Length: 55
Image 1 (cartoon, one colour):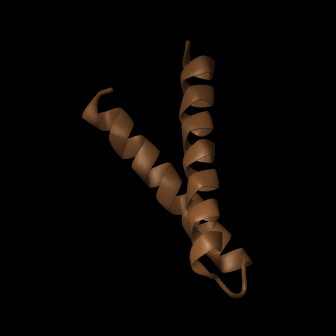
Image 2 (tube, one colour):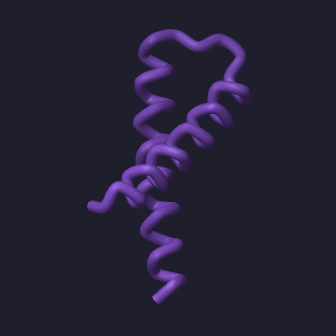
């Protein structure tokens, strides 16, 4: 994994995590962990989809 790929995953994760936190009214610790994990999976899927389209 290059630093560019890691940065892209981090940016996707941050965007998805912020979107999730805006849509949820009250955030408890367990909800934050689940939301952050789901955002990470979404970020990985977004990077994989972008790479698939680019090839």
